[in-house]
Length: 581
Image 1 (spheres, one colour):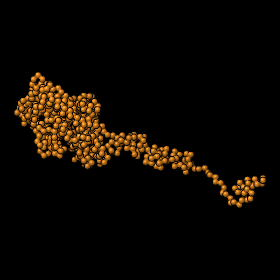
Image 2 (cartoon, one colour):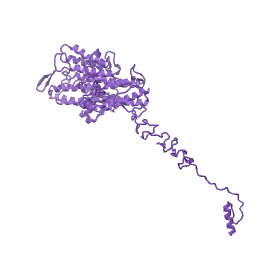
Image 3 (tube, helix red, strand yellow):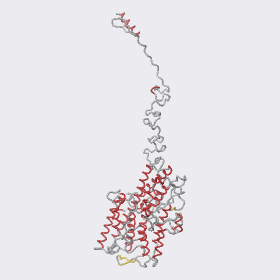
């Protein structure tokens, strides 16, 4: 037994196999056991080389995304396309549109290469040229000159006095501003409330040469020239003095003729007020209560400015024209066309720096409160860039009357700024990409629609004013002379701006953007207003009332309310704001 035990031990030691009965098994010898050497760790980081993605780098052991950058140094260890985030915004440098400026949202408003954080949208309408580096590429002097021609015409109408027998001379004086004959050497007479010098000047030609109004009015100058193709369909909304196929210029000429007649007939308008008849001293308002000075200015603002901006320059083929230099100028034709639309809108280039009160010329900070600002600090007011003109001022007026419910001024200005930034980037890149075109189209739509909203809101404002004026009638008399002249002023502004609403292709009355609204509704609005206001005796344009004067007055007030309701629906105005305007 001891012998067997001993043999088993020896066999175990020698790796032999023994049978239980003690026989020598005869099996072959097994190989000796393998003794492993210590695994190699070249960088001494505690991870064997064959398990270390970076055997020679003690700081790295793994590369989860296989991009060749260790997980410890890779800000995006599970993204093979990214490793670094310079600005720490969570977006890798390879895909970051602003590598050094944190912008997790990657907002790129103008669809250019750089995001807004490093390629911001300007806050003022200032852009350097793609043709001459560092030089401004902004120019719209012709539009400024036309604004001043309209203002010059206003001054001429306001200055009119009774001049018996001088109808032809008065007609020629007023027509001068329409046809522009000789304007280049004529002082523009523009001044500002603060008395600062106004530049350029003193003449219209110092701003821009060869300008007129009839060459830019929708439908043409009536002589086969001008903007014949810019009248959309037909001209409508005024019947008196028009032929069967009227043009806007015909209405302008009619207003000129009526003014010349009123100022040269040797008679004054007489009205009945409480206490008896009274005679008026002015010559711009006729006996039917039409203030031709207001009608003329407001109508021209639409037939020229709104029409040209939205139905001409905003219709440009920007993709083509951005590649074409405008003559020898420091800008492309596409940039210039957009600038001209901005010029017709009338905003100062730093419009967003103005409060609504300031832009409306209703007070505010020194240097802003009169509707202009010496932005470059040269001591002069540049009418081409530092003054709020035209419909831009109407936008501010309606904003200040909405108690903060609207911000038309900023909406329009921001759209102009972003649209122009798109074109600036495209001009420098040499092409307008599809993405950039989409952004541009959106901004043009916003600018066009907001611009027209300001005009429509102003119509609403004057509807409210006319209704208030009529509520002060003491039928069949006016409360006093001011009741008549104020009503005539407000009615002229209402009707003139109302006529202006037909000139934009982006109008809700034309583009189908508002359900249930069509051009028929705008025609209805203008028909409800008529060609003259309702007077205190219940007559309208010489037609006596059917029934009492008060009944006629109430019916017309109701018609104006219906017109207001249509405008509210078409432009999607807030009902409370509409009442407050």
